[in-house]
Image (cartoon, rainbow over all chains, first blue to last red; front, side):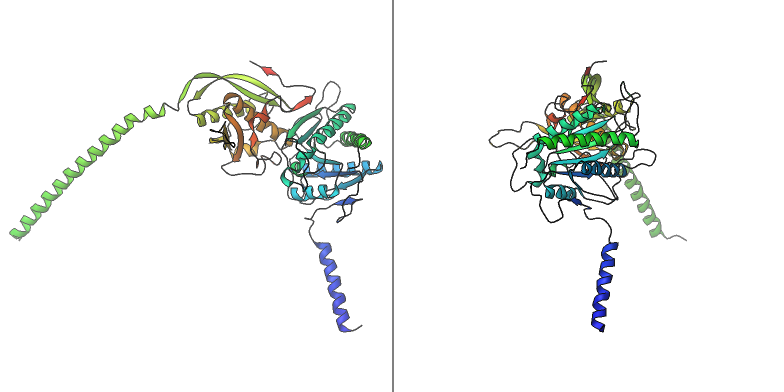
Amino acid sequence: MRWTEAVVLGLAVWGSVLAQSAPQTQPAQQASPVPSGQANTGQFVVVIDAAHGGTDAGAGLGNGLAEKNVTLALSVRLRSTLQARGVNVVTTREADATLPALNRAEAANHAQAAVCLVLHATATGSGVHLYTAALAPAAQTHPLSWPTAQAGYVTQSVKLESEIDSAMAHAQIPVTLGRASVQPMDNLACPAVAVEMAPLVAGHITGGKGISDTGYQETVVNALAAAVESWRSDWKQP
Amino acid sequence: MISRVHKVLFLIMLLACVVMAAFLIRLRNRAQDRLHAEATMAPAEITEGSPSAPRSVMLYIPNDLDGSMTSVQRSIALPADDNAQARVLLDNLIAAFHAAGSTHPMSVETGVNEVYFLPLPKARGEQASSGRIAVVDLSGALAAAQPSGIEPETLTLLAMMATLHANMPSIAEVHFLVDGQPRQTLAGHADLTRTYLASEASPEANPTSRPGQAAEVTP
């Protein structure tokens, strides 16, 4: 081997080592089956956005538990459940990485999702809180108006919220419905609902359960998966 | 031995000192009289913004458990000045959040630095603007004490907007600052970069839940 070839080989190895050691601040997009750089061609795709991450820990949920970890755990669990049921899933992050709201919306809009679920968790309230964007409904625009992209999907988002509400009722989980201004909801060009999981306060039917209770998390994830399946059965390819 | 010239010079200087001292004392007395006269006129201006007789107002208290909003009637002495009136209303609301047994607990008793008013931009062809924008400057202490989450943060903002709109109907829009500065979110979730429509906060337009609905209570 000549000395020029040795130098080129050395540079290539050094470059690959640097690329692997780079910090995870880019969108950690689990793109199945919509690989980066390709647009979705009419498949039913669900985007799951685990809110917060990296330097943004989100709400403190007691006992040192951070919201970013709970949302990630829920995201991974929901992704596995949906994939097991044959649903195509794109997640915005698969690790504890800082991800700006802009990148989250970019990943969801690129996937041309049929459902966008933004996962949150809080120590306040009881059961599951479902929120749609507070934008007034409007016609879908081409090209997309980024700050109000969700306006064209508000009606569908409310229907999706109703679907999730029914699934939660079936699972005997109390639900609070509302409209809220939370990033990146307004920028999502898909039927989108923010799902905020709160502890389950003991009531007439339910026993009290903490937010880290795996059984409770599984019940919520299964209800979400059931709602997505129900939504898919009525979904028409755009 | 002191010469005669020195003696005369000394006497002239002594006389000058006495005259100057008398002049300064006279100026001081005049300044005192002027300040006293201003002080006696001031209370008339202050009374314009001081609390008047107690008035019946409506506070909107959220319930974290079911996302509902309850209207509560209170009797509060409100100042005549609009800015102070809005601030007193919000401080009473936050005190209700802080009270024992609150359905939307918060660990601070007050949390509003100031409320400013701006006229709404005129719509095309409109003679005068149809309402006002209230700019609510929240304290950093309130933002720090606010429980983090979409529901608790949204309920805090909605309760403030509903309370302002119910008691001062000319408020059409509300914008929030924290310690005089624009901020992305209240405590990590609710967006503070946008201006809210006050009508969005009416219990009819907002959170519904299963089970439990907004109720009207007059203690």
